Image (cartoon, rainbow, N blue to C red):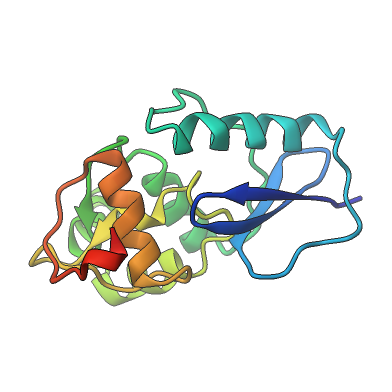
Length: 167
């Protein structure tokens, strides 16, 4: 059974979903869910993680996750979990890591980008830490302004022409 909870973040409402195995979803949304389970242990852990994260600190743990995807997407999402707090990487660098792990078989950065874009658990599986080869912000389901604010919160390096209102 899937349970849901809302989380009021500084960047907008977040809808969390979990089953008995782990967190299955974390999405920025303007809507709130009315069917909530405020006492689910995995949702409590996710809210604790978010409280620490939005206080400007590395939570230092990952709540239990239950990610559902193709083998390639799961491989990419596991790599995203390896990106340290406050650091960034590129789609190309991730493609090279996967290629190396597969014995040199070429993996396209665009394929990695597709998998990153389908990440069901934003923030905790840190897809916002993936940037363009030139250091620019590229793609984020939650919006580039939100991606910039997350990277600023972490003190992560990136370059972009940011409006004052974005930070």
